[in-house]
Image (cartoon, rainbow, N blue to C red; front, side, top):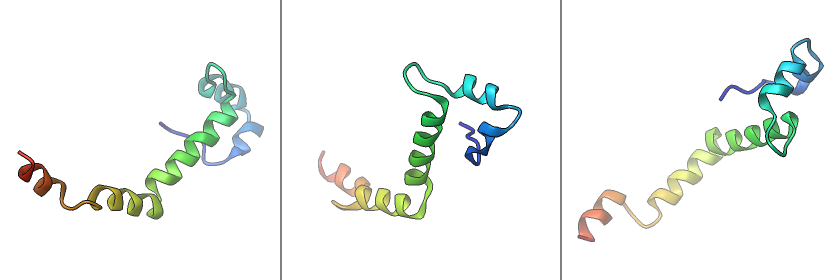
Length: 70
């Protein structure tokens, strides 16, 4: 999902649209965007990518483990 590049969007002419379209049931638009940015940083950053690969291959090659478990 698209997310604003910076929080300066809350000081722009489209701030009401951002507040309306990003709000959650029990969370403000600004808080929701902060959560998206944290999740994006973890999933897309170099650190997040390396951690994902580590978790995936920690026990060995998933394909090899699946073949041998049958």
